Length: 401
Image (cartoon, rainbow, N blue to C red; front, side):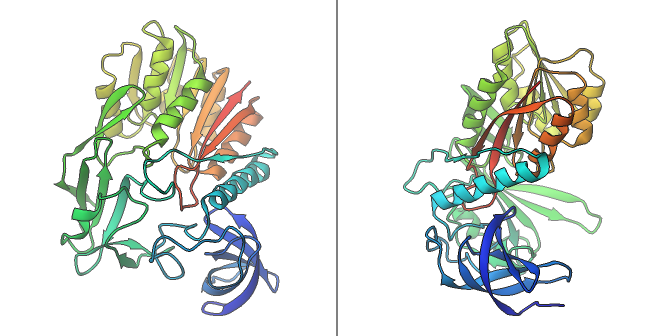
């Protein structure tokens, strides 16, 4: 059974993780983009590899849901840019859909019934859904024009701007000619400076990066500090996200003066700084980061804090070799989550408090379940709409023994 190209009339059911909704047709599941729960749509099948499910784009709405709006971007929609998932949904609808996804992942993967509310983040400007993205990665087509890729594909759509990007950050980028086949990374930092670099690969799989606009070092101002970080390294893309996450981590970590804490996947040291302030000079903060460049940023930014030790390496290897046990552990793993080895390494030291920052609800739920097997319970959860118009959501979980 192969339906690619066929148009199906579907009643759309629940939202699913990944920016699509679930429908069913003759016993098969259809994952439908550009639809909302409760709608009736005509959808063209875009991918069918056989089996129990296929993928489709809603090409006509026969019965619209109350939360449907007109997309702000002309490139959004079927066969369009894959960067946004919910341009057709109101702000409140987007947050409710994300809350349902987080709750469903916790229920399915961790066996927990949890009421989830996704909180908006403040943003300067007339629209809370637009103009927030401070970091963008673009492709370059055969004519040297930058563009964004279609959903689940490599085909580029040339752009002249992107409505969710920070105002003005792409103006000089879209007017330039770039190396065909390259990628262009663009950052607008906390000081308003735009940084752009061209990333090219060779036939041996090696890459080189050439800074074209701005400086290789970006400046951010968060948690009462001035940060100097690699312009195209990891930093929260929403301008309010870093500060809000730091506030929540500080509140839930609540490390005592003189305490011993770990900050795992520490990046440039944002949470390390918050924890260092709490434990004071007589305490100890171990910051672990696998990326040498991010670890170097952490050392540079927190050099004046004697209570901070920065270690570069894989988290599970570094913490296994540590003596003593922390009272508090903060971790902010990549999208794939911490995984069993890291959870076991943390739980074996029996910290009283674990604060887990996550950008993927499924990975978070799996790790919450793993912590549960080691005697921890979920004591708190906050979710933030740090990526409006997309299906991504940032969560902070509090785990206690």
